[in-house]
Length: 150
Image (cartoon, rainbow, N blue to C red; front, side):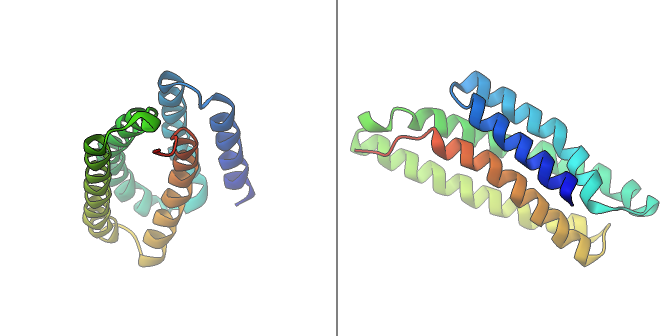
């Protein structure tokens, strides 16, 4: 577990150091994507059977989740000009954020079923805990980039 905490810390430091421009943020997201599988491997302790069943579902999950992440990034880039928003812009952004959250929850519900089909319930819970922690690191950096609307 200490290896996972160390990896998450290194990712967080990387985010803090480079979270200045959309291209750097995209690079950081790619780095996290690359390290996610390594972190999941360390944290999950799969049996051979579980691993063989898990990884194809995991790849599908990450592909689907990347679409949500791309939408979130686009919204954050749009929010970088939040101080200059019109009321119409603000409404559009709030509505887009709510739709993004709904789609994310729908995706999680869909994949919980798929992961339950290949893993014991405790490992499904552990996996989603891990995903939430990794997402929190990314979301922390994203939140730091957004100016409050005036």
